[in-house]
Length: 476
Image (cartoon, rainbow, N blue to C red; front, side, top):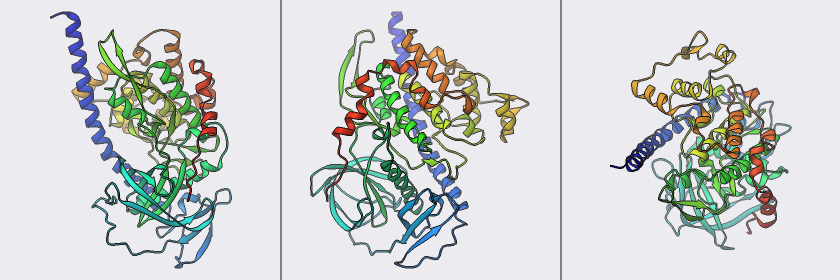
């Protein structure tokens, strides 16, 4: 058998193993996401004790608190108006309404519906202060599903515009998380500055028989789903640069407004339009997809945290989690920078930098790829079981040790080419993946890095174009 054929077969076998492992990890991710939700709920419960509210049916009342606004939300009230600077929240009791017989939930709390069903919203329009607005959306199809609920494509009956409607489960902890996300999205809508248009825009929100519903513009596939449907073929480096530049600009905008996203990952970065061209690669004798327009929007602000709010112990999805979070040393905006570094690597290679679900193995991978964990971080952490003296102790299983040894190599050895553009990419990734948060590059500085000089000026200015071309208002 020719050597080139054997090599192709080995590569194909390796890709199959990787995809099987990825699918297994995705299943584990969903389970761990459920565990994270339980932990967040426990964190919120611990910070509810200061409320001491008496619910007065049908009466608007005001609470003045020294605690962060997001912690004041009671179980039987919903946000009516928020004054963030003064920590003053106006709340009104959400009256229980009898459900129509046709409104049903499944055992997990998802709203049951079929294409063609209509969701009728009757609510107070908090954006424009018009009372008792009523309109209908016809469900077209389901776009996606997660632990929070479902996203359905709908058509506004009045103006025939399409929207993406995020329908939250009829479960209290998810309703509360949705209220927090609405709070953040409303804040973003009031801010000004470069990067704002790269964050998804909330068109409206309402409560539908216990299901919090948030309306967004309809977008394309996530950069992860596109990668997956493209057999994990890496993005061209020009698109890696464009996507990464937009992501950095969007998150820098959040950071300037004292907000940390905390859950940056390829699944939360959506193409505005994911239509593609088919490209034949003669060298690899393979056809792959190339997205026509790599303009993106950042989504999912359900875990976003303001600087002055309570910080949960654990944040971020495992593969994109910073070392200070794993070691429980406290976290701030640099944890977002770490996540972006991991995402840039994944866009370039097609695979995850830290493919693990175990803290100790995760730290071992970091050391093999990035060097030793700084002694000052080791001495500061309470996770002493991971270390002996100033060294990481890792006695993984034989298969785990073999995987780390064979797949985790110094980061620059993952470069597919040694041209200047590729070297600059790995230079900025290394600056984003510094162990110590205070040594990590800030996003404002990163935007001026030489790697982003490869992004065409017209692509850097796409934000301005989108501001002029896009209208996000829903007519009533």
